[in-house]
Image (cartoon, rainbow, N blue to C red; front, top):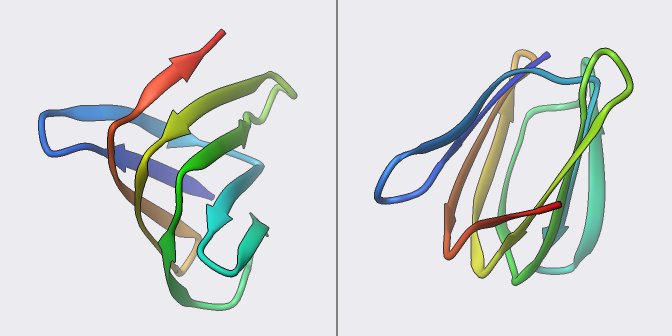
Length: 84
């Protein structure tokens, strides 16, 4: 599946991923390939991407929204920074 992470200022990340964990407003959840379509608001917390090679990327967000549709994840966030 593919993801694009956008802030109001710029595109933060785009590319293929195996899994995405986000801080949903009702609790953290993970999306894998062929996940059911959804739209959810996000609270402040950690976004974790698992890349196809197994590498993990971490970001801290202040909030936003996520949409999953046809193995395409769109993450629209505010106040994002990558955590090393």
